[in-house]
Length: 118
Length: 115
Image (tube, rainbow over all chains, first blue to last red; front, side, top):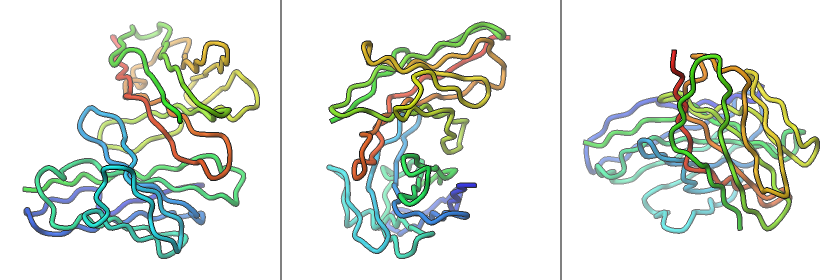
């Protein structure tokens, strides 16, 4: 149980275009979802936290108009990178948790999406 | 506020030898602590977690960790390394109460296994 999927796993786009990444909880309801960014050989940096039906809470330094997060249902959150530029190239990982479950204190991670902006 | 320090960005051990990955934490509230493993181009897999129950926590793949409050440590160990243990390992901390669910990750330790 507690499986999180991401789609796509890899995307290449041209500079200036927008890219949408989906994060789905497959077998549980995700009351909270998290989006992380990981540069090569570095740790995960939290970008934003989203609760279903609410606006996302962004970490300091993360541009909310550039990284649009939508958490419209208990099983789906999307991250849209708008007007992507090469410096946005990174590995994006989502995670999900369910406050109503016995594993409320745990985040379940998706497999990640590799974004390359040319 | 909370933080995690992982000592040693790279650790190499021989196959069959003891694995010890170090993690020290700082937290203003009783912490929940986690160890995750990441293989190349993959997400994170939970190895084990401490949530204020037993201080010695056993996880998957033969790993275990001991919570030592006096030393603010949560080091990860495995008695005998296997080639498949080669990966990146992350220690993470979060506040233990509801509404404070953000995870703070350490910088990671790359474990290499020498045949």
